[in-house]
Image (cartoon, rainbow, N blue to C red; front, side, top):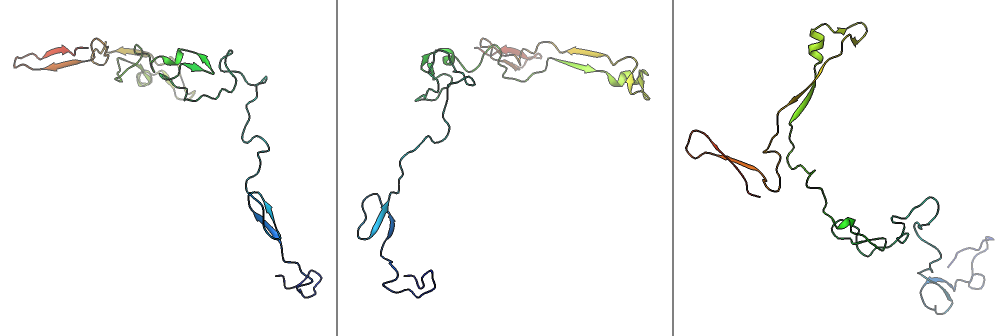
Length: 172
């Protein structure tokens, strides 16, 4: 109960009406209480809305714009994109002919700066070479052990007791 009115006079049972108020309820109130819903009606869109206009394109021209897929769109699992049958994603995750399982170095390029400086081709005043450093490409040959295929997935070297070790290919 309030102790004073806004005009400064003391509060009495006749001057102040403290019976009433608002409660949060999803039904009807009782007595002198008014009710207010705890859940409000949806009045608009929440988040972002996909709009098909000049600044947005469909993933597939024949597909549905903003298609809500029931499953993830992923390799090896999706046979449709935007509601259109598509076999592109049914393929494997990589091209085996381009895949490298072993990081190998079969050649290296060397820019011979120190050789050009020792030969007197570096001008200390201009900061330039009079004759640029040469670049050589050194090849180490093909590394068969670091280039596995499905037919020959690797090589094995072992000793049998003889002087020369034996090299065999793993069977694919």
